[in-house]
Image 1 (cartoon, rainbow, N blue to C red):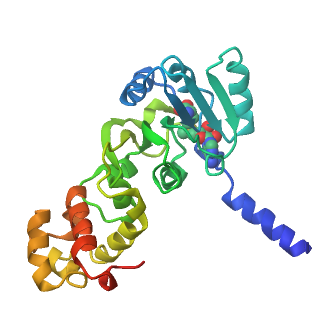
Image 2: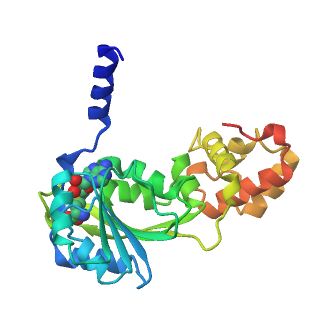
Length: 278
Ligand SMILES: C[S@@+](CC[C@H](N)C(=O)[O-])C[C@H]1O[C@@H](n2cnc3c(N)ncnc32)[C@H](O)[C@@H]1O
């Protein structure tokens, strides 16, 4: 390999490697208790502790679950945690990057105070096409991100696609002083749970994402305008009525159930050449 290519690869690896500047360790016992309670663990559960640090969550989780997989990228923290976990048969410490390690194939839960800088990447792994085994969990997110993920307005097609399969609930705000060192902003506990019945079938995930991207081009557009490229005028009136969406209701205000009803109506009634493709 040319020297130039080698250097380039090394630089790229450094830029995309784990970021240890955000090691905000939880030290408030009430918040730790609240986070774990929010996950409603069962004694048979396997739990992923993402970014386990020195184990502030790992050990209390192990008291309530069958198995804890503590993933930590920082070799020094992982070493400390491995030493502390000796003699705890329910805890497995995995030193590695959560973006790269293989997720459990069997159903699992998550309880984690994640590195905020890779929130979307982590959620995409848990909730996206690959995340068939994630059941439910409680995560600490940056407060702004928590509001975005749990708010009623949906402007992000990816988040909307996740909402077809999962519910998101902001449970409580966590003051920044509950971490050491404190982050710049407050955080929040968010509960995420897989819906018993997904609003759209899994196999339609890509098609739904294309529909959401197309319709969300103009989040403030009235429903009738946003959908006129997909449904004929004769189809549109009964479709909106069935989905309980007003003609002038802005796209960004539709509920997950309304999105699902409109998408399923598209599959059933609209000519397939009019379905958004990408
Ligand atoms: C906010 S701290 C939480 C630590 C611990 N769970 C606690 O609550 O005290 C996030 C942790 O994630 C680790 N981390 C950062 N990037 C990571 C990655 N890509 N994969 C796994 N762990 C990562 C950091 O080293 C840090 O220990």
